[in-house]
Length: 133
Image (tube, rainbow, N blue to C red; front, top):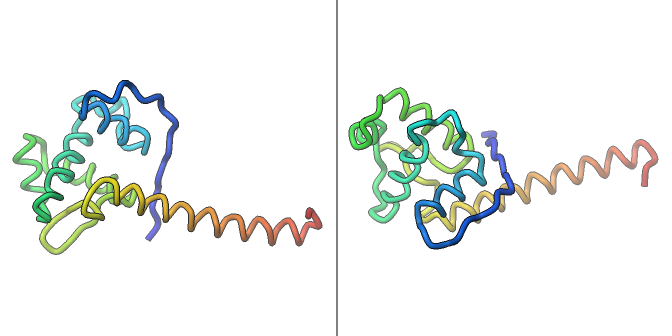
């Protein structure tokens, strides 16, 4: 399955506020943008992050009810988080792809290392075919 991960270099503010740190992580991964006026994607992300402690998957209906959002809005944001490779859909609902945020970031980094390795191999083949050593 293809994943779209956007990585942005954003200056981090003082590390004294967990919400600001969570916003920074999500923004650095291109998850949150200016169009999300009510921070609904951020709120969905936080809900899933909090659920990792109990290892329970959560349904889109449960998230919508908890956050007072429409199910359509929640599903839209869940799809975005799944496309980024951060969230997985399980039989019982949705959860982060790993047991905690640090492991999610490590997994994303491993995915990107693999992708860049493949791109580098193809670039080497192209250079070789073009005579650009």
